[in-house]
Amino acid sequence: MNEIIIRLNKKYKNRINKGYPLIEKDYITEKHKLKEEGSIIKFIDDNKRFIAKGYYGKQNKGIGWILTLNQNQPINQEFFLKTIARAINYRKELYRDKNTTAFRVFNGEGDGVGGFTIDYYAGYYLINWYSKGIYEFKELIINSLKELEDYKGIYQKKRYKTGGKYIEEDDFVCGERAEDRIIVKENGVNFAVYLNDGAMVGFFIDQREVRKAIRDKYSKGKSVLNTFSYTGAFSVFSALGGAIKTTSVDLANRSRNRTIEQFDINNIDIQEQDIIVEDIFKYFKYALRKELKFDMVILDPPSFAKSKKYTFSASKDYKDLVKQAIQITNKNGIIVASSNCSSFNMDRFLRFIHDAFKESNKKYEILEKFSLPKDFKTIKQYKEGDYLKVVILTLVG
Ligand code: SAH
Image (cartoon, rainbow, N blue to C red):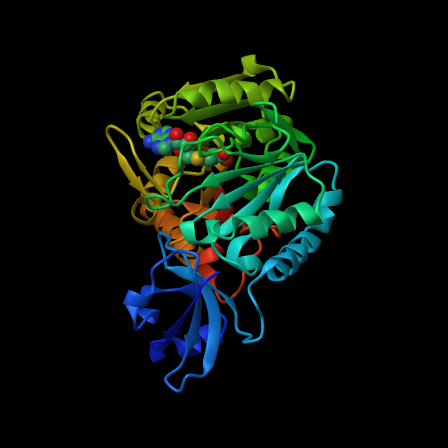
C-alpha cells in the first residue's frame, strides 16, 4: 500500500484523538496529494508529530476512515486478521445459535474499519464494499476471513461507483456457488435469501429483534397492515405469532411473489393473507374511504422514495406518515414505527411521533423502543452509525 503523509487541518485534531472514525474532506490541507483510493494516509500535525493512520476511500459521506491512532501499528495482513478475529469472537453466540443463521459478522467502523461490512447467511459470507478505496484491501480482508472461519462460499456487493449505488455484476467471489436461493433461519423462522440477484438479498437482518417482538408479543388475534412490506418479513412473523390476517402493501411488482414464497416456506396458509402491489399513499386513501381499520400497522419506509405521484423523505414526511397510520388503526391498536434514516436520531424520531399524535388529537403510550441489534456493533464516537430507530406504541382511549 502506498502511504501519503498529510498535514491535518488542526481544527480536527481533537476529534480524531477522541476516536471519531470518519475522515472528512476538510481534514486534508494538501488535497493534490490524494491520488489513488486505497492509499494509506498518515496524518501529522504542524510540528510533524504523528496523529493517526487511515485510508483514502470516497463514500457518500467522507473520504475515508481512520484505522489506528498507534504510530507503530502497520496496516497489513496481521492488522486485518486481528480486527476480523475480534469481530467474529464478538458474535460467537450467534454462530452457535442453530435457530438464527443470518447475522452481521463485521459492521464497518463499529468493528474498527469503516467502509465495508460482512454478513453471514447459513455458511455463506456476503461482503459489502462501500468505496473503491476499501476494495483495494480486498485480498487482505478475504484472506483473513478464510483463515478464521470455515465457509461454503463468499459473495460481494460493490456499492461505490456512484453515490453508494450497487454495481451490477456476478457477485460470486470464491468457494462453492450457492443455489440461486438459500434458506436461512431467524429465531426459527425460514427466510429465502438471494445472494446473487442484484443489490438486495431479500431480508434486512437488522430488524431481527423487532420481528421477534412482533411475533412473540404483539400479533396474537390481530389484523395487521404491513406497509412498505418488501418481501413480507414482518407479515410472516405476524402470521406466525397468531395474527388473524396480514395485509402487505408494497409498490414493487417483485414483492408479490417474494412474499408468497416467504409464507410458503413457513407453511403459512396464503389464503388468509392479502398481498397488494400498490403505492402505499394511494392505499391509505382507499382504506380511509372504505373505513378499513387494523389492529396493528407497521411502518418501515425507506429513507427516501419516489413513486409516480408521491415523494417520501423520512426526515420531512415521517410525521405525516404516522398521521395517516393513526387514521386507520383501531382503538387501542398498535403502531410499529421504524426508520433507518441516519440523518435524524431517536429523539427527533420520537418528536415526529409526538407531533403526529398531537395534530391528530389522539393519545398514545410507548410500549417498547429498539435500535440496532448487538451484531450491528456501533461506537459512541460515531452516532450516525446507530441508524435504526423503532418505536412500538399503542393508541390510548
Ligand atoms: N419493511 C421491509 C423493508 C422495506 S424496504 C422489510 O421489513 O423487509 C422499502 C420498500 O418500500 C421497498 O420494497 C419499496 O418497493 C417500497 N416502497 C417504496 N416506496 C413505496 C410506496 N410509495 N408505496 C409502497 N411501497 C413503497
